Image 1 (cartoon, one colour):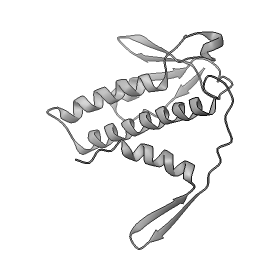
Image 2 (cartoon, rainbow, N blue to C red):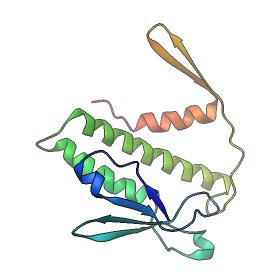
Image 3 (cartoon, rainbow, N blue to C red):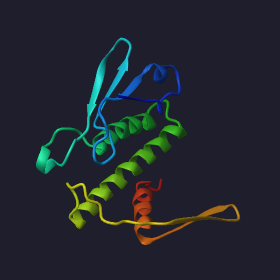
Length: 156
């Protein structure tokens, strides 16, 4: 078991215990979490554990949970108490969701989706300052990932 504390920030979040219940799998991530809050039924979260072809469907995806968070943030962004932080959080969550979808599509094209294999995907990033601008120089692959994330920010 491992306690997670990255959510701690205010009275509500300081009372919520988030615990990874299992050991990390071959991919390096945990699969079972429990959230507890005094007076509220525990919330168990189970992510897919293992390859679907071998283990079957046995848990949820990161994308499914991001979709829930995005739905809530979009609702707050359109609600009575909308604020810039909520709008930005929604846009960044949408970007994370799109990047994960892009990863799945790439792995399907490469024939590695549903396996523990990863094609060699190396990249380098250089950051330099030009006046008051920051310029990021990278290779084509990482540029495409960044473009995918940025495309989730519709012009308004």
